[in-house]
Length: 173
Image 1 (tube, helix red, strand yellow):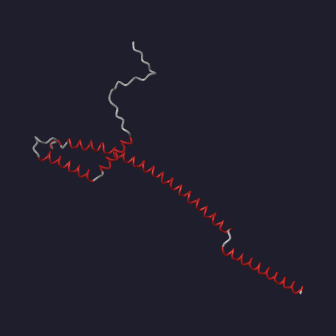
Image 2 (tube, rainbow, N blue to C red):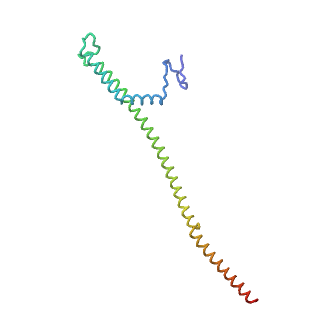
């Protein structure tokens, strides 16, 4: 009598190979496919393909036709439907990846703008501090006026000393 151990999962009896495709690789493939579908080459190619298909199955004898007009080109309709059923999700996947990239780029731009704003504010504060410091620094005109005043004081002292030494010489002589 077989007993089931419910604590242990059964091993899978399926022996099919598993294909592991990286989501990044699949996404890049989907973007490449979506990009190709938007090219004039794809549109012209599909138009030529459909035109040849329709002409072949309309104008040639029925023995050579593989999708006769009498059946309303059923095979062509199925092929185009299959192509559309795969194209729509792949295009949506490509758009989602593009939107994700745009979101990341927008976030980087926002961070860069914040850093630039912080740098600008810092530089503005530094310039303001320099302006305030420059008010306290002696300017060329201020130094000249101070030197002129000092020179006048020295000349006056020199005159006073000269006048005092002349007066002393007159008093001794």
